Image (cartoon, rainbow, N blue to C red; front, side, top):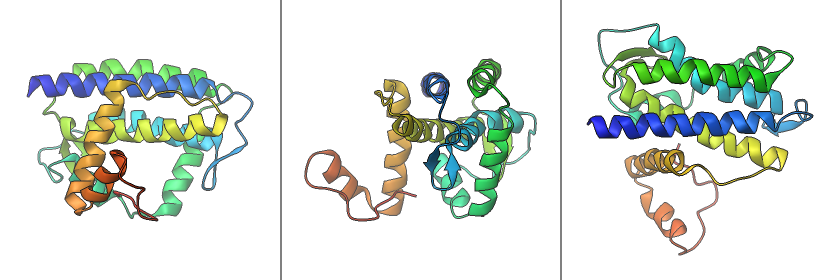
Length: 203
């Protein structure tokens, strides 16, 4: 549906610009602990890959579809080599250079027009195989939203998630919970009927 694609593009743009604003808050914090073994710089680098991978995969068109939905992508992608993921984050952080906020801002301004010019059904090559862009993009929006929340919490500058980006992130979180058969606890917690079970995750 073209309307759904328009909404997906708008959510991705909101999430990208919210991330760019958070990256600017990292000044003076780059070497501080952030998430797991990552520093703030590493986390910004990793989060920026939600943009740079879209750009890279648009340059790698494919002829077939291997992952038919965003849920299928997440299920296949989760559980990979954690050490490799961590190192890619550190490498991306180093690649931001002396002015990470400027590097992130440039990345956002380069990638958003590229995505806007693409078609919803354009086929891209991802680590789990071929996908339609409309199915891959929501996974990047979720990544941007979750890690920008992480980043803002670390630097002490939390702010509301932009509405379209937040709604898109919850769409995928809800779909993942439903796919896993664990939507009930999430719905009960979200509507004030108790907390989530210890260790609960939709991943």
